Image (cartoon, rainbow, N blue to C red; front, side):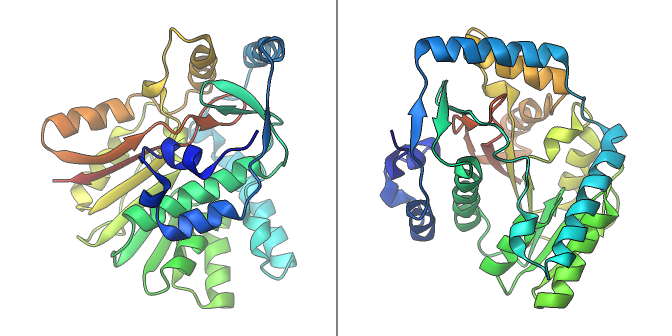
Length: 307
């Protein structure tokens, strides 16, 4: 089987591939999205394995993991510098770590290990072209390895693109690359749980997050208030969204179980929907793509603006 351009654009909430930006369609067509669909018996066995693995335990997210992320990004920084700034070293190794993936309510087995990362690159490209054109500054909260920031800066070379992270190594990656390549990128230290400063201020500033807010859990009020008070113009999220799962679906129930076990982002998107109804923000787009790794779907996206 093959994930077609029509499948991809439908996952974005578009009616036809002609509605997708041409660069996104061109990028999609460069990748190999062939996969095998599991049989009912294979799916049952895999669901049992997933459930057992969740019960065995995963570490919960939160500020106690700052040291873990600091060590991870320090390793990436070292590899990046040793490779003479090879951008391939910035691609997150945890993306594509699962042999099986989730697609539209079922498990699939991709032909290529890069399937998940390739899908993400296409999704990211779509969001960049659709929602991040025309800003003076674009800021990623939780920039990690910096590969989103650098890709954004390459696409928009006249825009200041800033990566904020709580890890000094993540900040260093971007600042080293700025010195090497001359792109308008930079990194700055930033704490989601105690945000401060003026980096988000400005009516022509956009904010983006990619599977970073998941680390906040239910402690989202400080950063949400900070964004609203900073008067950012637009916010684009790609994050696991527990509100989209159907608890009556056994497939979704496993994702809920994993999401709750990891203590991922909870309540944030419900709060955004409340703010939208109250006329405080306007939600421009919100979509469950139906795509994810073995345990959950981390590629739902949401786009909103303060009013």
